[in-house]
Image (cartoon, rainbow, N blue to C red; front, top):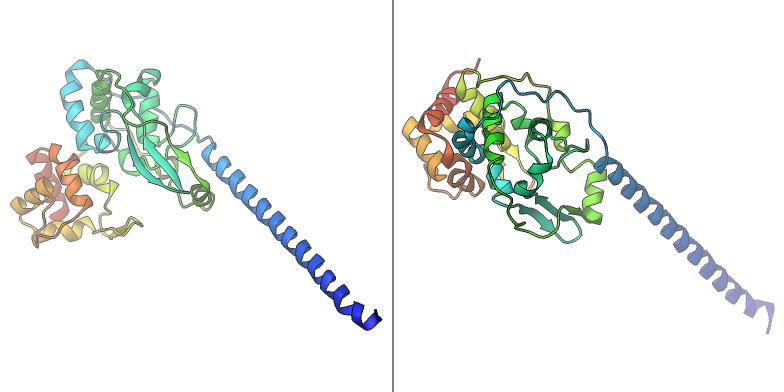
Length: 289
């Protein structure tokens, strides 16, 4: 066999070795990248956040229990946690997000632990909750929060409605590493604790109850195909009676299916009183400062 015949074979073997090395290097880089993403996600999930004060000027008391049950529903707590926990989201590769069974976890929480969870989005171990609407609930009044805590302390433990807890898959960890998953502690602001609801009451309700989905002056895209309109764009299109009907039924003037708004109206918002809805309407239709 001549040298001319061997040369193409040597070249072919060399190319194959080069290709194997290239693939091996790419695989190693991919593993390093995946490991880096995993470590970054783990660091975010286990990050300890500084906790602020958690004292209430109004102590939880039995007399507040009936109002606390109403507020637990009006502020949307029941929509997520329901009676014994609920799966909020689940997708292959992304993972699952579970609102825990409060009736079983609360006995191990102090009142201060619960205040920090609601207002600051921080667990007792210092890590952040996920998707808890802390950006809205950090302004909840001491009396309203004390009433909710008083009610929760009266609910007996119930079996878990779902098995297992929150678990993040590979795609979920990529999203965490990229900062695409909202950590509740990051949304909390150092608001001033207030014993009672501040005036005007409508502004308070807009900031605590409505702000979970809506902004005051700009539309908000939830990233899942639903755009919540600005509150000040919605209310002036209705009369006071029409606005009350909207919040009671979720049905707009043109009869469209508003999806999440209808769910909210039939759920949390159904526990607002008529005076609360009227106060909210008055605030949203007055001239902005």
